[in-house]
Image (cartoon, rainbow, N blue to C red; front, top):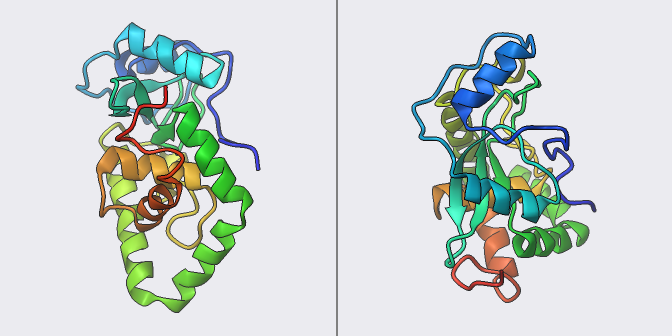
Length: 199
């Protein structure tokens, strides 16, 4: 499976949220995104993310998780990109080692098994729904985009559609928030872990 099917495009300008909102207004974007009080993202971090992705990132408002060496691992993205496009993926996994390890898991068919477990385990389903609600709350902090209201990412809360999203969420928010993100991190720990630099 290809990693990150919803990758922010290549034609974008790196931006913190305030700059992103300004770009959105100048691009004639629909209203809905509110400015955040987050500080601007360090241009050096954005340069690393661009290197990791092989393209310029869009709408990055913060580095949400880092490798032990300090390089970005997960970025936090505005819910409306600078060109006005709604973007539900708030936490975006960028570290190449993590992306590759999670892609291997996705190719194994694990997501189908995880989705099946939701129907069999009410407690797991409840925890996954709470992860969905956490994701929506984190995105709401960055603004209101009506087109994606109630839609989180990664298939939450009813299925597992993208492990990259769930791992990004788990890394950004910490253990115990996203059960499948935590599980995926445990499964790739022999290849990649946030506590060991592979940059």
